[in-house]
Amino acid sequence: MPYSLEFSVVFDKMPQLLAGALATIGLALAGMTLAMLIGVCGVAARQSRSLLLRRVVIVFVEVVRNTPFLVQIFFIFFALPQIGIRLNPTVTAIIALGLNGGAYAIEIIRGGVESIHRGQIEAGMALGLHKGQIFRMIVLKPALRAIYPSLTSQFVMLTLTSSVCTSIAAYELTSVAQIIESDTFRSFEVYFTITIMYLIIAWMMMGMFSLIGRYFFSYPTR
Amino acid sequence: MVIGENEILFLLQGLKWTLALSAIGFVGGGVFGFLVALARTSERKGLKRIVAGYISVFQGTPLLMQLFVVYYGIALLGINIDAWIAVALAFTLHASAFLGEIWRGAIQAVPKGQTEAANALSLHYLSRMKDVILPQAFRIALPATVGFLVQLIKGTSLAAIVGFIELARAGQIVSNQTYRPLIVFGIVGAIYFSICWPLSLYGARLENQLATGSR
Image (spheres, rainbow over the protein chains, first blue to last red):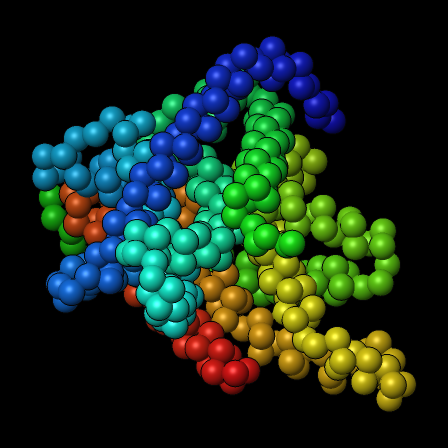
């Protein structure tokens, strides 16, 4: 018997799917914020005088970047309760996304800070700028410009990765889809539909990031 | 219950599938990715646009969704194949888009003068690519390619969510049986790390070599 596609059962559930999409965006935004925080603090610790602190950051970055996100989220959700840390799925998802994105953010931001030539800072001092001005205008702004494209594409990746949070039943688009799938048995239709939804979310984010980038993080052309 | 020989063997069985899926995805994705890169850098506008769309769809959707859609899509077509073939096909398609994009960048990073020189020598497309452009592009692409291999190995863990027993799923099963998630996921993480980290270091070294070489 040939299979006939039946999208209407999925479209009937559109309100739930849209709510799930919103949850995904919320999860992603929370994850990005945490990732940014970890990124900035991590770079500060990475450049600090304390050898121990620098080592801790290096180990963190290498461990996170060389193990799968799924194993990280399983570890936080299933293993940490064994030592008394019990978190609900949504909090686990945000922390996992933040830690994972944070490790990548550290590497990206570090690259940006290191791309500022020492001579630039010296030139700033020679011009009599004070410390705050030097940091803001000579280090921060060009560094942000340099890392903006890779940081934002990392953020889009983080948003897409959030689908893996369904594995601990966190509330987001994929887990909503899995519930609908088990209700309707329309696996392909459900996943195809949310794939398109993810694509729209990703493209919207890319568009927004490039718009923000054009106004705030691009080199003046005149 | 403790982690005994049986549990470790079960994890290693899973590891075997992780490595197999990674290898198939990388080789298959390499072959298709090469075609994707060639199409993307060709002079045919229509072809370029189609391939660009292909790449951006794979880059704009979660790998997990790609697995689901291919997995259930094949079942829907009425083709009766083993689950692992469906999963391997999904990883192959995924890898072809990402490797294709990496290699497109590498091909375009070869200075234009090289193409012009090859044209001036009246080399045809095949020889221009094989003898002039690709050997140079290969060197440029190597670090990012190794980087993607690490991503792919980590990505194969998502096959666990469609129920395929590779390393991550094996870990989940052992953890459920032994009630020792801390040590089990610790071991699983350590196994992934011991595979991915050397590759990452190798990739970083290649990148440094490339940076000093072109200075």
